[in-house]
Amino acid sequence: MEHIRTTKVEHVKLLDRFSTSNKSLTGTLYLTATHLLFIDANQRETWILHHHIAAVEKLPLTTSGCPLVIQCKNFRVVHFVVPRERDCHDIYNSLLQLSKTGETSNYKSLCGMCLGNKVMRKIPRVGFVFEKCAFNKFDV
Image (cartoon, rainbow, N blue to C red; front, side):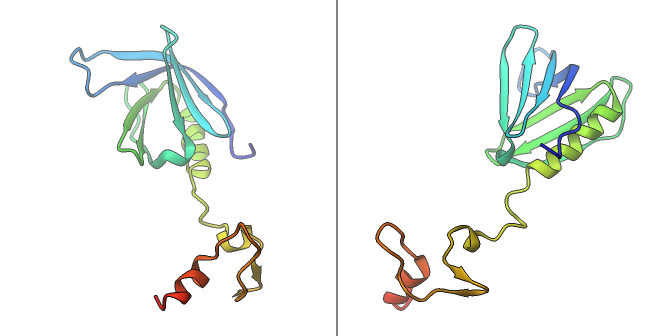
């Protein structure tokens, strides 16, 4: 939660590239610890999980607001136009921090099977499978 500065932005436009009528939806953008949520005037919700975000791009300021483009790992591309540049910058920085996928965390230390930088050579108790040990059995 320490990465979130702005949790709610009103009057945000969601641009739909695939719509035949060049209309945009106006609604409220919410930023939570796990999701980005857009609710339009018809109460239709658009949810984006932070771990699905591949890239966030803040485009130059226009007369209608500050464009924010979010590219997802499931090939979804979402265009928001935020009315205030400061709110857009806060959302942009928050999404950059929240969408990081464990670059700084060490997954080996999460399983509790490491001693320093050395991985234990024993196969753990029943229920855990150590891939490195399993592959060593087959000389892979």
